[in-house]
Image (cartoon, rainbow, N blue to C red; front, side, top):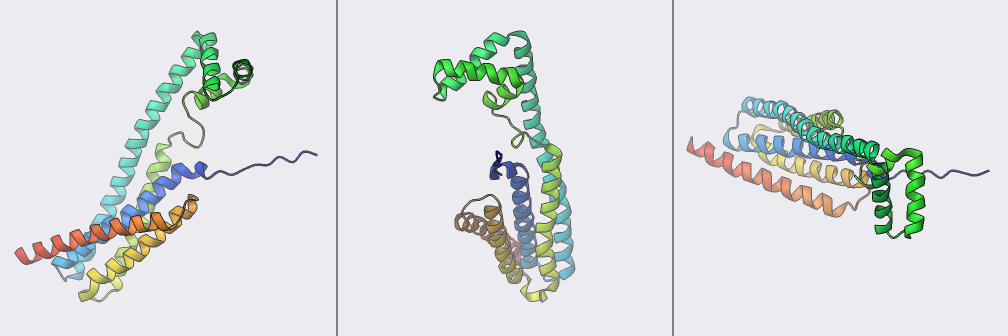
Length: 231
């Protein structure tokens, strides 16, 4: 009895993983930076929380809209390419067969074998063969606007909630430092989780996200402190 070995490749996660990591990191960094900046200018917990909540809501909506528009544009381009490919397959099947053969030859297959492979692939599902081998499209890379928008909004909200909770629990005078330190730890955890989920090394992505998170919070703290003294 033949046992079918099925492999689960990490590339299949790329659609939702990209949106999830981007959303959570952006939510944590932007909201933490906003809170730190406001806290550097004012010690009023009420003002800090109002700014944080406003940043969370606005950021989540912005992430969802931005991802939906961006991925929809990608999806429109993919659909246009696929429609053109269907038309070409219907109108000039021999030319398309030659094109598929040439693709396999370019990849190192002998011409005669490449022709046989192209003929067999065309006989089974010509459009699927051309979409995959000519256009580079398959199930795990085709754009999904709604999935990307919902994932980004949800993960942004989760990421943004963390500095908000920390700011509510921290003593008023220590909010900038407490939020900064807690969120850098959170960013390190997110970097490690994202790298692990994607099958990449942990150290480099973690250092990268912590570094840029620290830069963002330092910048907003300096600006908040300057504005607080000037106004």
